[in-house]
Each structure stands twice: as structure tokens, then as C-alpha cells.
Image (cartoon, rainbow, N blue to C red; front, side):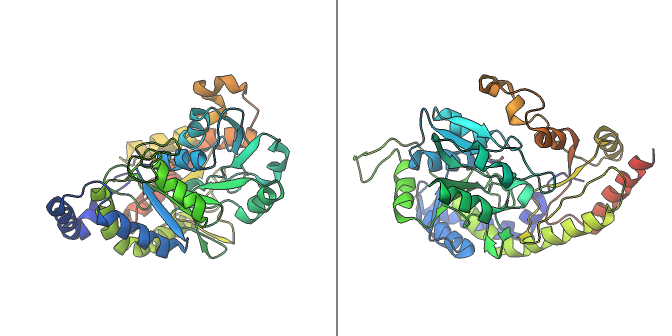
Length: 366
Ligand SMILES: Cc1ncc(COP(=O)(O)O)c(C=O)c1O
């Protein structure tokens, strides 16, 4: 059993993908070719957001978002300590300071009740993360941001395809950022990402920044980066988008089956999906104080599992200068100590899923 099965989809649509790639090889516009525009249009239709600007990775989408908001030295950006390093890394790269707010014990997303206390006159933006495929309580976060005139960037690297109050992830705040890293719900065959906004001026800045701050040929009003998505990756994503709605449905069904199978086991928490949310289960993650025991039993049966973010960001050596210590963000630390992600991909068959559930039940009997 694979932790994330990328082969099954390729078996299904590999011929279409190959012919899309061949088309790019034939026209030769490898940088910002027509497929990039076509993909951006399809992604605006899918999310309902006015603008989509594709970029080189999810990390670069976050970096470009902060650059467009002119975040720099002396600024503070609020985010969570339980996430992939990119979310806070880009803040520090620009000379700003990441300010952490703990996560909720149920959804493992930003605890919006602690957000207001973290705002200072240096705060420039808030980056809530849609962890494991479920959005945080964006209405509450947006209304606090509005009160203080702050931008909200949804780190939707793990939640493309999810919904919050019926609206698509990436179209819930000032800016939405996502990743098309291969293992993500909408993954390409290399690195890729996208930015979303309904603001025309911000969208224009995204387009400049992804090409070295260039407004028109040889005219650079602002600093930028080399942040474009490859035409070949856009071509691949165009084909994957065709099966994506079906994959989202499959993910939801698998998440439900996992949660039913693992319900009511002592010392084991399954994902808690808010009633206004649908999750795409970028990962299906459980919490247990018996994590090591469960992981060993799974390993013994050739079932892969991963403990993501087992050291939260405030305890990472690179952020030592922020002066945090163990105990500062107790919920993030508990989740980091107990989390375990199980095999998840749209083409995971029921038989394999049952095998995982039974192995966990067995682990808990010993
Ligand atoms: C929450 C989160 N933010 C940002 C990223 C960065 O995306 P990428 O790997 O495409 O740079 C990831 C991906 O790993 C992620 O999970």
C-alpha cells in the first residue's frame, strides 16, 4: 500500500496527459505558454474568484502574496505554529516577524478566539492555514481583520477543492494561496502553485512580481522573483482538473469511511469537520497518545504512515530567535506529539482502507 498513490490516476488519464505534454513540446512556448492562461481561466471558474495567477510553487505563492502587500522589516504577520515551514519561512525571508497564535483543539486550525490579542500596530497581515484540507473559521477571522484593516491570506496549500459556507477555499479572503506539489489534492508533476484574489490591483502586482517585478518589457517598477509556473505543468493540471471533482468526492467518502471505522476507540481522535466545512482530506490524520505503538503495528503490516509537523514551528531551531519555549502553544504541541497521517488518495480501495482500520484496532488492543 502506498501512502499517497499517484500512479492510479496516471493510469487513468496518462494518455491525455501525454498528448497535452506533446502539444507543448510541439509549440515550444515553455514559459507562460497558452496553457498557463487556459489553466488560470479554469481555476477562476472552479473557485469563483476573479483572478488566478499561477506560480512556481505554493511557497512562492505565499512569498508573492506578502510582497504584493509590501510586507517587510518591522512588520508582523500572524500565523499558526502547527503548519509546514513555508507559512512562516516566507514572513522571515522578507525581514518581518512571524507571530504565532495557537490552534483549536478540535479542527487543529487557527484559534480565532486568540487572534485579536495577537494584533499590534505592527501587524500587517494574518495567514490562517487550512490544515489537512479543512478551512478555518474564515468569517470570524475576516471580520477581526476588517476591524484592524488587515489583509488575510489563506494558506490553502492543503485545501484546494474544500468549501467553507458553500464557498470554495482560495476565494475566502483578501488572498488565497495554494500548492500543486504532487501529493496535494490538486497536484501536478513537479512544483507549482497559484494565487487568488478578487482585487484587481493586487492581481496586477502578482503578475509583475512573478516576472521580476516587470510591468512591461524591460520596465521594473518593483522587486520581484522568477516565480512562473512551467507551461508543461499547466498542461498537466488542465487534464487532472477534468477528474478533480470526482476525486474530491472520493476523498470525502474515504474520509467518512475512515472516521466511521475508527469511531469510539479510546485515546484516538478522528478529524473534526466543522458543520460549515467540507474537507478534501489532503491528509487523513488521527491523534493518539499511543502514536508510536500504532505506527509500529502499521509498519509491521507494510502500511505507511507519517507524523507531520511533529516539531511545531515555534520550537524549530530556525525560529529560536523568536524566543519561544515548550509550553507556549500547548494545543499545537499536543497535536504535534500525537498526530499520525494514514494512507490517503482518491484511488485508495475499500479493502486497503479496511486493512488500515483493522491494524489500528489491533494496535490498540495491545
Ligand atoms: C500548509 C502549507 N503551506 C505551504 C506549502 C508550500 O507549498 P510548496 O511545497 O508547493 O512550496 C505547503 C506544502 O507542502 C503546505 O502544506
